[in-house]
Length: 164
Length: 406
Image (cartoon, rainbow over all chains, first blue to last red; front, side):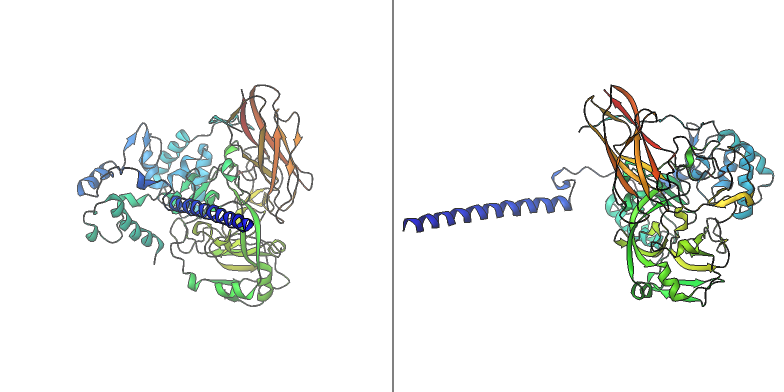
């Protein structure tokens, strides 16, 4: 009898343990599923008022006024440097490709001319006529090569503490 | 439905929701007019890329990774570089997509539907290294023209598809076949519908390799749009431009394929070494085939500061084009001494290999950890830039990271 009671008691304890584990498991699963749906826990944060801007007619006109705005010597819309011939370059060199293809390159006058010829021969670039000289001068002035040597120092290193 | 319009219509809806207001005159907006907020879409969201990816060009789209983003053994889409010569197709009619075979050296012209390709041929999955021929261009002096890639135009994802050689066997090719050339659905930047932005290819021997695939899956899913959905030719170990995206036709040629970007200075280097800046005639330029041996330290990110005496573990990948990497070494004294890294075998031929090492620094100070891989032909990476070439291809100079020990 005593043994049977002991057995019953241990079965009861095991059952209790099992159900506790089960409840904890369900709770953790619930939390994880919630995190999956809302990783930023936005439901627990007070809502911040949304930035209001609407496409009202006034805004559009303002945007058009700023279309060719230059700030700190940079033509904002394209990223080109301010200088003689800027708008000729904007109007002739950004129709097919992004200004980024120009601003990331550095070439001598001779090689800018060669690049224009290549685009005229193979990429449907039009004849630049009397504007060509101003365009080439702008490019060769503001996007000229600088000597880099055979290998440069590492630059723009962002230092951080690496913990093990 | 045109993709851009689809994005636009869903964006318009979600924009009003997000802003919590109605767009004034939304209903009477003229067709073809896109609100300013939508004219400059977020490329990271549009292509499902990590915001740490670097945009080099937005017309056409070109984007590269940074070394520490490439730490995964299998590159996920969010860290995979994007290289485009033309415009990404706006409409993809996947239900009616076909792949045609033509050219001087086919026994008969033949066309397959996507479904026929998937069901008529055995499918294979390989992990394949794709590196842009111009990866590293930004370091050449005098500067080379084009997108100024630094180190992040390389990836090694898994690609699933059918073997080109199995399909070519079904098509039937003549004995005089020399080269294949791909054609695709992307469009020329000038908008000229008669121009292909790029149509490259490989010699028939490379086309017939087991790992050369007509792929329809990347990392187990449909290929992302920017990487060639729904069909891409995958030629591992060669300049990634040989792996044509949005593939819809393959020409079997009886001569070296002469499509756009096969001639002139495109993906070609001087057959004989030249001095930096030297002019090279067209006939003295040779097509790039296998990419050279190269490696990247992907962990830790450059700029780590550590305490003296703490262990410093590095890891990364190495690849060698058509060959295998036989050895990776590291140096903390600018190449005066080299120590060997642990190196894994590739998952399959043409997949990159992983290396790691544990480094101890002798004293406090500024260090650079340089990695150098050697291929199975005993050719190693140079520490300085390799031979200059007009378009700045094949820069496989050693990668390095900066470390401070305090």
